[in-house]
Structures are given as C-alpha cells and as structure tokens.
Image 1 (cartoon, rainbow, N blue to C red):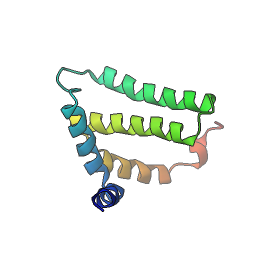
Image 2: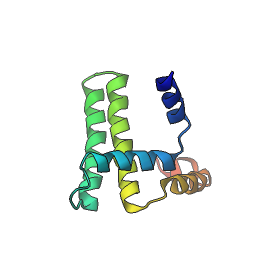
Image 3: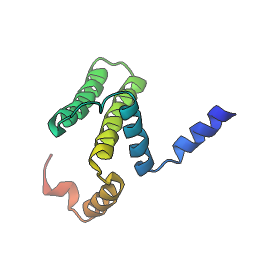
Image 4: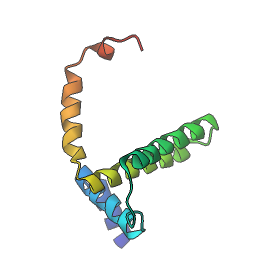
Amino acid sequence: MKKLKAHNMEKQMTIKQWIEACHKTAQEKGWWDFERSDGELIALMHSELSEALEALRNELGKEEVAEELADCCIRIFDYCGSRGIDLEEALKKKAEKNKSRPYRHGKKF
C-alpha cells in the first residue's frame, strides 16, 4: 500500500517538485561534491538525447527510448535545481509564446 501511495504522489508532482527531487538525489549521490560547469551539464543532457536516438536506431523499443528521455529530463531538472531556474514558469511562458507563432514558424522544415 505504501508503494502505491508513493507512486500516486509522483503522478501529482509539479515540475518544481521534480526539480527539487532530482537535484536532491544528485546531491545525495555525490554529483555536486565538486564544481560542475554549465557546458558539462548541458553536454550530459545532450548525451542522454543521443542515447535515446541510438535506442531508436537499434530498435530497442519504447521502454528504452523512454528511459533515455527520462534521463534527459532528470539531468535538466537537476541543472535547474542547481542554478535556481524556474523551469515551470519558463515552460508556461514559452507555451503561450508558441501559440502566437505562425504555422511551422514560417519555415518549410
């Protein structure tokens, strides 16, 4: 029963809560025991997307692709937590901005 309750809580977490949780875990696992540059952290996000692409290319299935995408989100959330970035607010603003853009932003591809 306890496991089910924790799972249900995760479904209800806000982006801010995910950021706090992911950054806390990274700190507890020692990933913030040394200085990390923005470039390094963004490269690690990118590497997770590359791993998702490789999972697609190698036809490893949706679960593997989803796991790599989750890794990317976790790295993004951790980064935002370390830098005090309000990603939830940025997402809201960007989604609104995108609503006002022309079809395909006026581009062919």
